[in-house]
Length: 227
Ligand SMILES: [Zn+2]
Image (cartoon, helix red, strand yellow):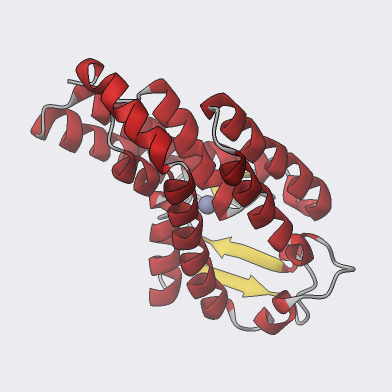
């Protein structure tokens, strides 16, 4: 899923648990993807491309069981919960952050082709709705999801514009007939991973910045509930 829509999930988490600090929430919704970037850059996980990349369905997330498998996410979310809820004695924070971590794989399962394994070492079956097999439809669905997050959060118009513009900016990646920078990624999966890393950070910063006044309001409103 496009980074901005994962980032928008933090709006939902914040609405549900307003006392939980937003920076760890933002980092948690993309923790799985940060791991994917690092593992790809290190060669631990593998991405391949077609000889020509016309849209994101020409890029294949061939091997990513450590970042994007169901078991890896369960372990990661549980670890986050143990550390935050037990070690730091913040049970509500722990729950919210574990849900934020888990949201990533739930959204990827709802959009990816069949590329998400059950666990490392289990090659098949792999899961995914297959939506990314029809990229333009995926873009529409993703954008609706991002806007829904904004609507639930009751965000500003600027925040709405940011979510929509980030999605529109990725249009060429979602349409084989629209030429864009994705052509340059053929045979360069590590550059793709590095770009995704930058895209993640840009999406998180954009959502964090354009919702900043409401984060503060929410934090003060919910602080008494979050202890
Ligand atoms: Zn992902």
